[in-house]
Amino acid sequence: MTKKQDALTDADYEALANLRYILRRFTDFSASAAQREGLPTQQHQALLAIKGHRGETPMTVGILSERLVVARHTASELVERLVGGGYVTRETDAHDKRRQTLALTAKAEDVLTRLSAIHRAEIRHMAPRLIELLGDLQTKGPVSKP
Image (cartoon, rainbow, N blue to C red; front, side, top):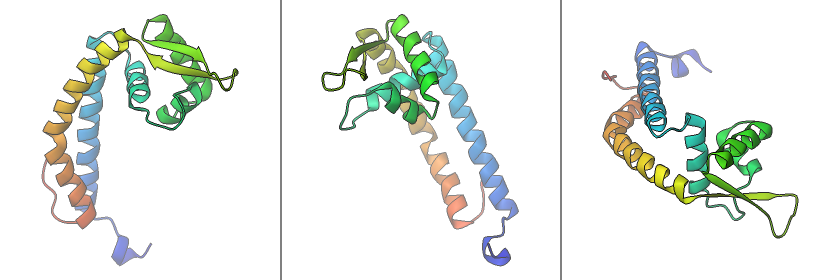
């Protein structure tokens, strides 16, 4: 990194701090919304990952662990809790008996629909500010307050 070309400015630090602040506010919003529905944050994230999976292969614990950036055994324990709570079903894969595929139950679909609707609304509310902050970081222009 050359000092003149890539030196961080006070505006860069401010933009990074503001971005972290906005992201933390969204994370707090998300956790609170999930808690109101009776779900821990990680369970909500897992349900969303399962619902949003559009890969060529069905959702599995391995894919879920990758999507949540957690260890496979952590994802497996999470799936156990979701199955126990009536949110997820597991089925043995027809082609590979060692693998189990995951699917959402109607209960999970209902909760996820409510949570996703309020999350989409919050993101739409935050989008202009996020776009502005990302632009500040990209162009090294003046920084505005959150």
